[in-house]
Length: 138
Image (cartoon, rainbow, N blue to C red):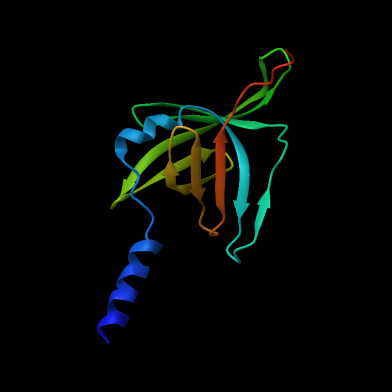
């Protein structure tokens, strides 16, 4: 019985995701490219090539997200539509709250590192992003 209890405790520890630290939220700033979507069924969809990437700009936990299209000259093209964002702390979790004239929603920040970002929405879709690296024709 003792072994079963230890096994269940170990599984509980493994299943919990690490808490996102507040000081890491600033790593959200910059260009992020979608890498994979994990569905609630466990299936995944990988993205090899992306025409658009997400640009996040935060200052004092508020800012915007904008879809941009990288160009071969290193510049970005955009339609100038920005989604206002705000970082919210709820318990030990952090969320990005999006606000546009069309709606309001939020995604949980599951993980944020220098080169990987994982967000989860209310439909249990988990989005994994990687830091965007500009094209180089050289």
